[in-house]
Image (tube, rainbow, N blue to C red; front, side, top):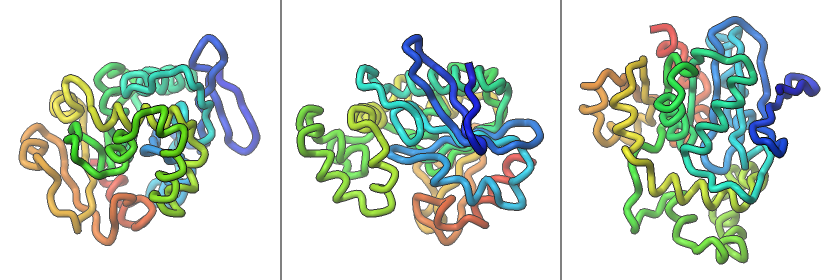
Length: 262
């Protein structure tokens, strides 16, 4: 059942115990656009400026926080696999009356969105990935999720959380502090380990329009030719880093608008 709060806040109970996924909702016409954040983030904090940009505004928008993050509940008894994230997000979308949405998803959220499209194809009309994770990470990787994975869970909960918050920097830490510690750790581990088949293979096999945005300064993403050959539009965005929607709001908004109207 979807609950209605103040000023666009919504929520859906996605487990029998009442555990709730929440989102900020922007009114507008269909198709609905679903925005999904990355690891340790929150969709309202990352997407509001872009989702309300003149070239994107006017469509119904759900700025969703995955379970364990942001405004959503943070149960400690969940494994937080990418498949669980996708299924619980799917349940929230169903309760919100969403069918055949355009899903815009960043980083870890992109991995979740790929799994969502593969497991619940009726929910996803188009998929727009924002510098998303497509592959498992090697043991010696040093990215955010791999760094968190390097701890044992007990150590992360005891002291690793404080070390990661310090390492993450002020901006990422601002939303990471909203995450459940178990949710952050387990999500990072499953993201770094990937899915079977891999997120990349699932993406290649999807029969829907797909776009992959990446920072132009990073050069072409790994496997760009294979992505393009399977029909994925690979689009560079200038003047940005990994957080494209924050670093270049205008460039991001125009790239999304073009992808969703192509």
